[in-house]
Image (cartoon, rainbow, N blue to C red; front, side, top):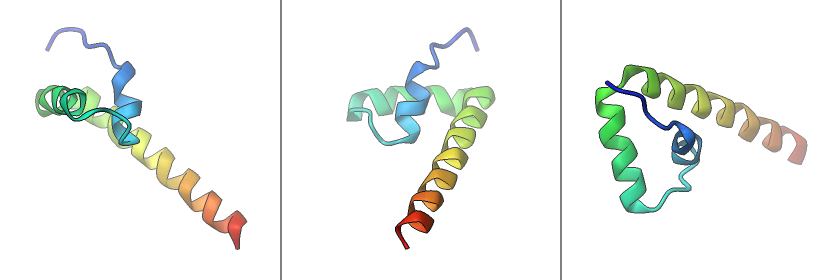
Length: 58
């Protein structure tokens, strides 16, 4: 696949994109292993940050 502007991948992984934008990213992800991996990495970091917030709240 050609070059892709990856700036939306972080916003996508946080659920911050509008429906049409998210659908566009999902179409790209279906064909691009590199971007799917990047989204998984964003989601892993998000999970760690969510865990830290929970630990600090207790």
